[in-house]
Image (cartoon, rainbow, N blue to C red):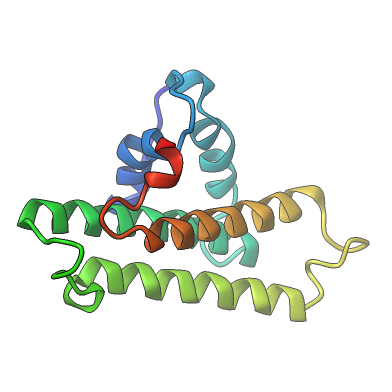
Length: 153
């Protein structure tokens, strides 16, 4: 399956690099749920048309940006005790993307878009996807020397 990427380089990084890291069991691209379920879901609405879709995209960007920041730190030779998260611009961008995704989910909830009787299944799937992406990003951020230790055990 050939994926076309939005202009955003973090989204491309997610589809080409990060999706393989966050799998607990190695699988082919055709069997990868991150590529086959979440990426198409994140591209199902244009920017601004769906709060939950925008939140899902920001969740994807947040985890991809965090991954880029981790890789940059590792290339620079940062050690866990010497590296400060605020010294890496990608970590800060990831934090901002995470905060914006949470803000969009909160707005969607306040607007009543997440009420079971009003929300369609796609909106709920995007909400769950955004929450899952942000959860993975948060768990990954706790293991600074190897943020993906959770997926390697």
